[in-house]
Length: 313
Image 1: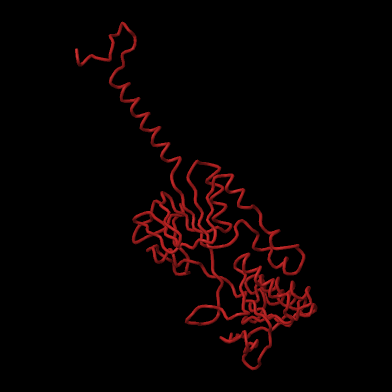
Image 2 (image 1 turned 90 degrees about the vertical axis):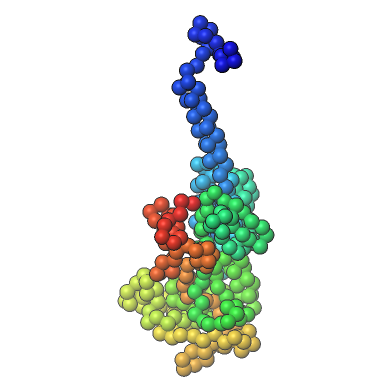
């Protein structure tokens, strides 16, 4: 009797075969598995275009617990618009913010600004910051790039008066400094350097553009096309110096002078627009493989490599 308790005969119409019971157990297990997957923890390092686009894409397609960690002060803004704000074609840098933090909160994306990641523990599946730890089931590294700085310094700190434009906060500092500047030197003959040179001339600031290359926009144009760009800049009052390297003095804030090969160039401010390099130190220290070009090695699924194999997470 004990073996038949809770079950009725076929006449009652409610008996289940062993196969039906096993199928029901499998369905329940599958349901539980789906629930766990729906609320998996995703941590994204980097609040730039890649990181935020990834976060919103994941949110549209899942109920994952999403956290974005960024040491930037702003997120979801148009970085390319900074030169147009400097030239007063756009009213303010705040106009470049595409989506406010409230948008991400409403979409249940936890964005942590001004929070720098200090390390990644791949084995323990934890990201560590100065504020705490964040466990993850899936990790996205979207740290972007760092400005390439053509100088050697043990402190790796730029002297006062020398700027880069990596972030919106950088743009705000530079814009504030421009209020009292009469002469500015821009180092770098790429798109950012040229756009900023045009912007500063519109403000009536005496601007010098220096590049170590023989031409401007060497990655985009041949010499004949580059000459047209140079002629246009010079017609607007920009002094263009090509084929020159610059020495940035440690006490630039006091001297306000740059040293070229055969001359000294006075400047109230300096803007470095010398290109970028991948920001991979977090990945490197975590044991993730870095390629010869300096970027993170990934497979066709964008999975990173550690040791001899690509990681599933």
